[in-house]
Image 1 (cartoon, helix red, strand yellow):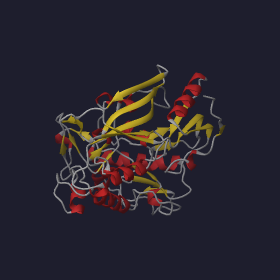
Image 2 (cartoon, rainbow, N blue to C red):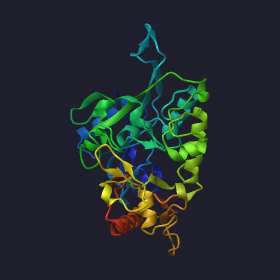
Image 3 (spheres, helix red, strand yellow):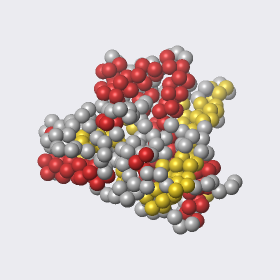
Image 4 (cartoon, one colour):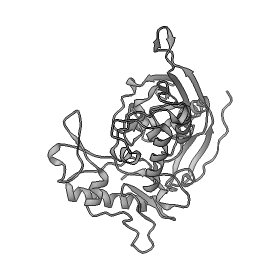
Length: 369
């Protein structure tokens, strides 16, 4: 395969949902998994720093930009096959395996899954970004996470300089975590570049297409919106519509006209702490290791940071979202330095109030919180 052409780098502010970040040194567009692997391999062989970019929805890039090569994964296609395992009475049971290229739009894939009657990702509707990013963070929302449906992940291993395939169990998924996040190649990126992700879906139940039953609804707010009990099911189309409505109400569905969506989504992860460290009145979700998960949004609000915090300052260029305290937003004309100052203010305020350290969820490139 001939080497892909590169161009002088664009501003990363034009490729990220925060609309922040300086220029890339070099830019390569990769439209297939093969092109993605090749572009990374060529840059690695040349000793260049590499930043693999998808939808740019989970990145905070320095104002100085990125000095190396940005490889931008876009598209690549979807393949649907009957699952090779799982038969009933000698006949295939109807499960399907859907292999999606890393550069495909995540919400576009979710919309197709709902239309096809594939249950298990419907509560992840409206999340920006590409499919390749989802196993890295073990993306989750409203009681679902991609670990529940991922069967395999095919990657380019930058250390071994070859392709590898990991089963779902081998991905070492945790809360907003995976081996792809943990195993670093260098300061800029992961050892493993996701090329494609294979999801496994059981046969539709209860009706065709979007009328098929969802996975059991696991999140109380979503269950209330749907008018069902936690653990019950609802039509896939209704679950997707409800999730999109909830996300829009929190400024979590991209809209160029709404500065509340000029963000990286939830900026801080929910902390895991010992039970005796949870503040009185804060949400508390017991974990298998004896710790509890509490709410970063609750901690932020009760440390004195209300929705829209920062907007009252003269010439405000960053603030907490007016709809959701977990999102840090660019109000127009902001710099990455502005955003990080706000993030530090919130983090330090929560630490002072409760002694709990918040950890950023977005990946920082050339900067640090």
